Length: 156
Image 1: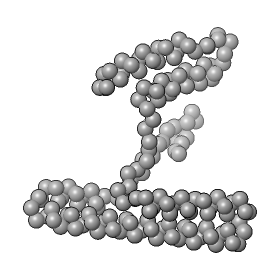
Image 2 (image 1 turned 120 degrees about the vertical axis):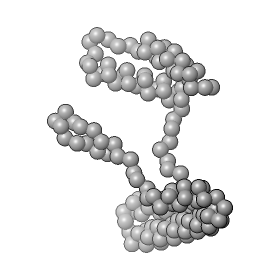
Image 3 (image 1 turned 135 degrees about the vertical axis):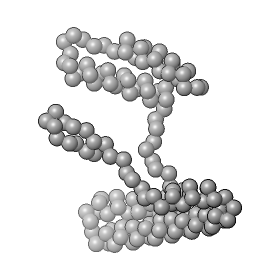
Image 4 (image 1 turned 180 degrees about the horizontal axis):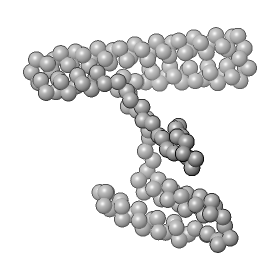
C-alpha cells in the first residue's frame, strides 16, 4: 500500500473507532481524553504497525545475543537468590564475558570498515569521504524535552 492509501485507511478506521467509543457526558475530561487518545493509538497501531526504537548494530550477531541472554539470566538468578555470593560471582563472570564478546565483535566490525575505506580511498573519493565522516561522528542520543505547566523543563 502507498502512503495516501494508508492515510485514507487510517481516517476511516479512526472514524469507526471514535464512533464506537461510549463517551458519557458525565465522564470527566480526563476520562474522555484517555478514551480518545486510546482510540487514536489503537487505530495507528492497527493501520501502520508498531515501530521499534532499536538502534541498528551492524556488528551485533547471534553470538552477542546469546551472551546477552546468559548475562540477563544470571542477573535475574542473582536477584532471585537475594544477591548471594555465588550468584553474584556468576553474574559478574557472565557480564565480563558479554562485554568481551561485544568489544571483540565491535572491533572486528570497525576494522572491516577501515579496510573497506582504504579500498574506497583509492578509486571512489566521494564515497570514501562520506563513509569517513559517518565513522568519525559519535552517537548522539535523542532527547525528549517538554515544559510542564509550571514552566519546568521535563526530560525522560
